[in-house]
Image: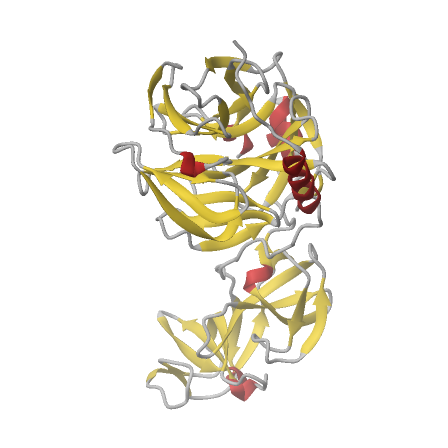
Length: 453
């Protein structure tokens, strides 16, 4: 007997069309990540006699040693005591002289050699005359521009990290929030490293970007994916909407108008139990199990309201996120939750507070494509995308969390993609909705997150 899938009338079609158009709007670009000040040092020497090495960056601080002219120094950081002046008398260096560490005023130091660590800008930004936004702007840097990191810098009393940098022949200061160590904005693999990878891994690792237009690099179909087991729902709960994996069990979320429930399957595909029906879930969009709280979070789609489900007690509850989100995935590597939103992929803490961390930019598939579930695992995000013809036009977008890189998209020719999870062996599994058939399936793909490292 065919199961009933009540996709419904003109009102629903209008709402879906509006949602798809909204989803296709240009995405918001945000800073990719914060780079902490690395061990970047400079070299110098004392240029005057009997200079005090002090306990802190102030002339009233205790002297820990008197330094003679010519004493060699390792300089660890530059400290500005004025928010507007870069005069040498208003700057201090945190230094090591022999085995003693302390602070020396900059006008008593001749710097002979600065650090030369290569870095790139993660966004369009200003470089300034000092390490704070109160200093004069000297110029601008484009996203991806290279610079040399000469020395970590900071305004006294501030917790914000900056770098003294050299851009071409110019010197200035940039916020460390917009700096990535290395010659490229994204982590790239050498030809030698790529040669050891599978064809799929090579395709994904060869050209990481910051999003932009979608780049399809592979196709998943019956020739390269293996069907793990079929699933058939429970009573009136027939339409799968999401899946999560605990390492030993799969929780499959069923929804639509006919009924909503969570069905538990063993790793081998045996149906073990089902939750009570909960019509309050409505039309759910994704589910993930969070081992930090031992709860499942159920996202309904573009709303701040979410539901919780305790797999031990079977009880449902309610919670909220700061931003409207839909499909969700937990990553044990980062211990964070990733959820799809209309402006990108949002990052939430997994301790139950849903504290918002940052927003990842998404690639664009153009009009008439809209997001499904948001899976995660091994430091990667797997974003399901459906087209106008859900049964034949589906994509899995792959993002690397470490550098906010979009690695590429995989076309799915198995049916409508509802969820992506990572198995204990590292291989990505897909929940595929067959759209009108009696049986849906969980498939094992050839994508292994261990190969993407």
